[in-house]
Amino acid sequence: MKVGFVGLGVMGLPMAGHLLAAGHELAVWARRPESAAPLVAAGARLCATPAQLAAECEVVISIITASADVEALALGPEGLAQGFAPGSIHVDMSTIAPGSARRLAAHYQRLGVGWLDAPVSGGEVGAREATLAIMAGGEAADLARVRPLLDCLGRTVVHVGPAGAGQVAKACNQMIMVNAIQACAEAMRLAGAHGVDLARVREALMGGSAASRVLDVMGGRMARRDFAAGIQSRLHHKDFAILLEEARQLGAPLPVAAQTWQQLNALMAVGGGFDDTASLLKVLEPPCPAV
Image (cartoon, rainbow, N blue to C red; front, side, top):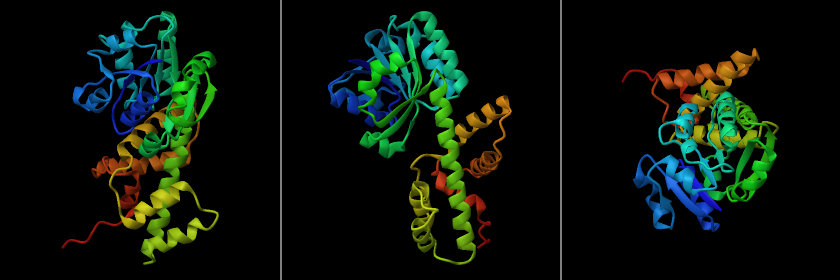
């Protein structure tokens, strides 16, 4: 297929590489053209604008940061909407607000263009190893057309429902995962306050009913005090802003998520936004004594 890709960060770059390696004809657009250099060297075409990218492709996949970024990419000057031919599809794999996904779907529908919100879970490792979990919202027929592309990127693809439903599923995923990270931080803080070895506590818990991937990965980082970013905490902070605003609009009580949100706010306030979310542990610790 003729595929366009936007968002060549730590996840997008390997994802685009998988599409190219699978034999698809790949074109890319990037705000910083140098970020596309490895793909161009491997045979991808570099487009000057999103509109040009859309005009040359059957499907454009994007994975960028926030709702406003996706809306600007699609609807801004020389945006994708200006280049798409009827029958094209925009697959957005970013994590954005469900309402934004629905608005974009409605706009594209008027142009005869398909839309899928297809956010992912699995992080940088999942992107590199093509083992992402993909949660799709949109028309089943559009999903069927792009399924060969998504199968290059992930291990599971689930059609959750209409436009926006993929983003609802992703919000639920983020809520469970980051709440679990906060629970791990509190457990590690309690163990540390007792002077018990955190690595041994984690090992013991991994043999019992508290075992989980979050405890395995994030508990390990906390025990090693390895807070270098796997996924920067500012991105989870952004995700919680989305899900709690959705909860406000719907009147849905999310008491545990609200508490985790406050801990993420505290982490942002002390400059931890570019550290891994495992650094939620540090928010619980007393200030270091003056030297």
